Length: 312
Image (tube, rainbow, N blue to C red; front, side, top):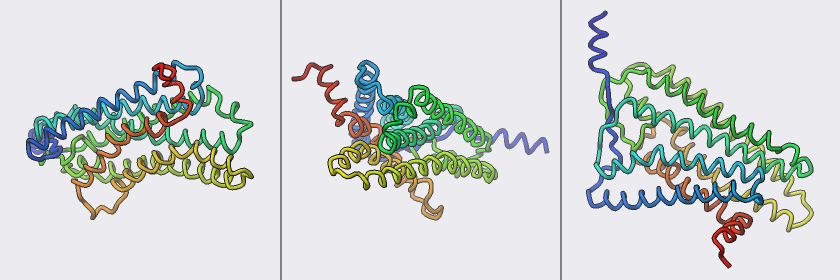
């Protein structure tokens, strides 16, 4: 018994190999330049949004409060996944220690859960604004906004701590190659040489609570919004109400579509290369596009930006 434990300890994986995008050197160099540019643009855009929201009183509204939180999340998001993507493009497949891999997994899962909850909070904000406009100042007062934001961040940390602990407690005795550019849940579970039924159950329950729960809140909010908008007598009022929700619907559609396809498709469909492409959408493209979709095309934000940059 003791001998078998010693053998298990000796063969336990201490590091993983991230394959990233194994292409020709010239293509990797070009992709490195592209993704580095996208990373810097994402940081710049979201930093600008946060600065505008918290430095101008015109934007101190619940909707922009949540947008500021979302921009902060996007900056953290790309800073968790992008470094390993860039290192992989620079060096090719490379080793990452077990501790660093689990740390990256913890922050990645935490931010995913937080984003789900923030998107649901933003849908609720639009529901109150359109369906109960007279009660909006009361229902979306600062204490409520701070409560929703803090619960989103803290809830993500708690769920991620539980999931990461379960995954880290599994035994990995080889192979240790992750066909991904960051440490994700599914590739790690596939590498475990012990039973993962309990871990998969925890992952499933947390997905139901966080992912499906927030999606249902979002769908319920927009169902109520749609019914309210259809009963508006004025076409102008309907167009104005819809325009305040359009950007949020676009972001929700992109985020949930990619996540649903990756995590909820049948297990017999296994294409890790396709997974990596879809992962790029919600870890690179979405954080880059969100500021443009949400804020930079928003009239109030655009007016504040013009004033800040002294544009005519």
